[in-house]
Amino acid sequence: MFLLMSLLLVSQGVVPTSDSRWDFPDVLIEDSLGPVVFAADYNYTTGDIYVAAGVDSGFYLGDYPGIVIFRSQDHGLTWEEWNSKLFMTGDMKGIDLVATRDDTLYVSAHASNTAGTEDHIEYYKFYEGGNQYLNHEATAGTAEFLSPTLVRDDFEPFHLYRAFILNIDGGSDSIFVYKSTDRGASWSLIERRYTLDGYYCDCDLTISDSTLYLTYSNTDAAVKGVRTRPYRDRGNIHPPTTIIIHSTADTINADIVYPRIGATTTLPDNGQLVYTLFSKRNTGTERWDLLYKHSVDGGANWSTDIDTIIQGSTAGVISDIRGYEVAPNQYMNITYCVLHVLGDPIPLPLYNNYWRWSSEGAPTNWHDTTDVSGGLFGSIPEIVYSPGASGTGSGVVYNDAMGNLYFDAPWYSGIAENSKENEDKIRSEIVLPGSVVKLSSAGATVYDIAGREIAKLTGDSWDLKDVKGEKVNCGIYFIVNEKTGERVKVSIPIK
Image 1: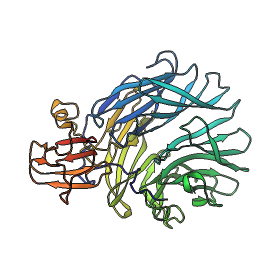
Image 2: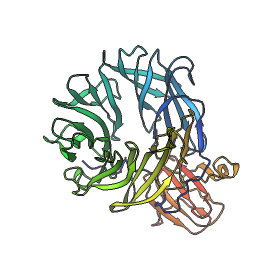
Image 3: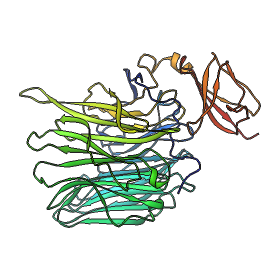
Image 4: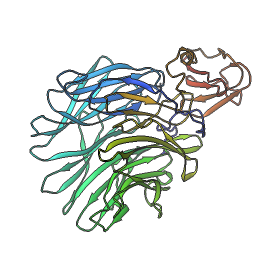
């Protein structure tokens, strides 16, 4: 299936360059959250960014753990608390988030009760002015959930998808993949996968156009490995076999964990570019590498070579990966968290968060190895986009051991991040067809909501015409002046 308009495109107005800025200080979303897990997503139409934080008891939300939602309406410059939900009891273990074009959010919250007798995943719908409990998955005794993940497609009406591992102590593990066609009110099982003589370690989901991709790592009596499984046609069709991305017969030291999957395009299935990252421990050295393979045909076949992002981490490397397009080019953003243990005899853990991006048309060519957090303790970054921002690629959300939650992106310099000067460069206008948008200086580029270049401006105004001299349709457009940093969001309503 092919979408005439790429609904998974990220509206990035400018192609990534080597001088993307990741200066300090970063934007503080909230401080004093205490132990926190978090997830981020964005509204494809407005560029608003949302962060869902799962907060443990005794800190930000008082005596009970719960979820608090933060929102930025200016591409990450400032943040507000948008919504929250309290649990009755338990410890937060993980969280995932998807946002829709109407600013409705869906959250999966993974927690266990304080007695340790139940592990559960709760699903919520958040909207302006309220929230709604959707449904509940629970285990008993020593059984637990691993790697619960939540994604959505962008067809109309959109579908939600979720996956998790059910780990049964002394028994067989299973991976469950579900789909909801009614916005989370009910779920149907796409597939349940078993392992009879081993266990599943971790899993991840992503979706591009109508293909849902599952990746997971597992250990059995013979090998440890990473596998992927594409589900075509919105999860209705899947191939009979799972593709082995990488495996090893060394069952002692060659652990393979933290698989993450991302797709960079919404072309038909056989043209999608897909990446799977995973962390592997080296036999003998006990050091970890971050490795990846890629597919240029929608996950049907994978590269023979295993490519390396980094080598020699003290612990398994946790990463995040998302793809996007600046038409006609495809890109991939990745972040990863590397642990270095310093000090002797008292070890001091130091985490560095790195961000990189891939070249267009070159799946193994990566640029900008950038330390985005400066070595703060205890942080794991997550990628998030913001259509209409003046810069390129993704921003990142990360936390530190002091309970502070941060945002950073290459479109803000550290000096100007919280200054009035930078705020003055952000302008939004609603104009009628036939109007003219005035700029403070000459020369800018106009992009539509899908990131496509509409017009090049040589003067200091835009007459709402495209490069062919024809009037543009109603919708949202972005004017970006790379030299001055000026950016204008233009909304053209129906006349």
